[in-house]
Structure formats: structure tokens, C-alpha cells
Image 1: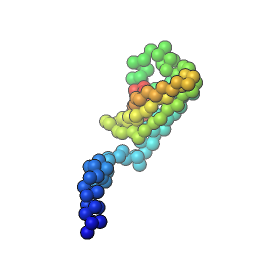
Image 2: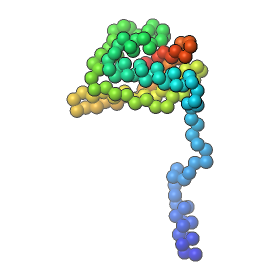
Image 3: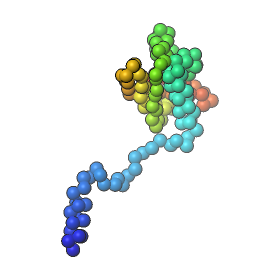
Length: 135
């Protein structure tokens, strides 16, 4: 009887947030082929940023980004590509677009900077996804 009482008291003191959830978090349907194409384009663009490959990165830019950014600012975005990395998280679909949360990581000497942002891609036709918003 004492053991039962101790177990009941222990379970009663477990915080609500530590108990199991009855509803799993809603996840994006990653079996959608469009998701795969959009994620691939986002990864290719961020790799171009990481390596300073402006030519490959510019090919992946949509018209909206090209019109809203000066050529100098786009060039600056790709310059100084030493000690760069990125993290990309699960994307979500909104009105024919995919947005992916990203973290851009840069290093200068012993100082590492992490900047959270997002990259947005749109379908330019025939599953050819382009960047609609820079991270």
C-alpha cells in the first residue's frame, strides 16, 4: 500500500509539460514531390552562398528578388565566403510557396555568428523552384 501511495504522489507531482502529449505536432507532408524540389533548390542556393559561388546562386534567384535587390547587394551577399555554414529546418507550404527556417553561420577568427532567418521558394514552372526571399 505504501508503494502505491508513493507512486501516485510521484505521478501527481510530474509537471504537465513532462507528461506525454495526446496530439502529435502537425508536420508538413514531405512525400509531396514539390517539397523535395523546393528543398533541393534551397539547399543548392545556400551551398552557393556557403562557397561564394555567385554564378550558381544567381541562377536560382526569382524575378522578385532580382528586381528588389541591387546587383551590389547581391554580390555582397555572396562575397567573403570563408568559414560559412548553414542549417536548414523542415519547411512549410503557404499558398504555393515553401519557406524553410535557416541559420546562417559565419566565423571570423575565434568568433562564430549565428543568424536565424528563412528562405522562401516559389515554383517557376515544371517543378523548377527559385528563391523568392533571401535569408
